[in-house]
Amino acid sequence: MQVLAFGGIIYLILFFNRSVFVAIGKPFWRFHLELLNACFNIIACMVAVRYGILAVAFAYVISDFLVIPASLWTLNKLIGISWQAYLRQLISPVICTAIMTILIGLTKYCLGTILEPQITLVICIFSGVVFYIICLQILAPLLFHDLCYFVFGLFKCLK
Image (cartoon, helix red, strand yellow):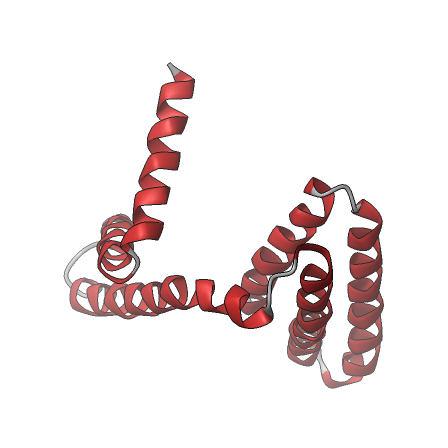
């Protein structure tokens, strides 16, 4: 499962890209990328299956990684964003995620032997959210502002 968690990161990146294709009226490009991704996944898993379930998980994640350059190239062709500019926007969230992960690990390490697992889990979840928000506010204040604007806008829509 830990190997497949990295696939979730890739899924989020590719999902955003695919949403852009639909938003600009090019769903056929999305279809082609998903077909390419499916072909890579099937071939990689067929090759890896003889080595066990862990190898299949690695093959699946690696095959997803192989589609990212094609997706970025397609985005560049359609909306003119360079891969450098695209990846630059991911730096702050990745750093914040790494810091949050380390701090959650430290929190779990410090509280894991003292408290019940359920209470430790709740504290780790809450502290993770707080750590991420503080880190995002420090490292990417504009992104933090946009996030606050979005969240408060959602609350206004729900009233």
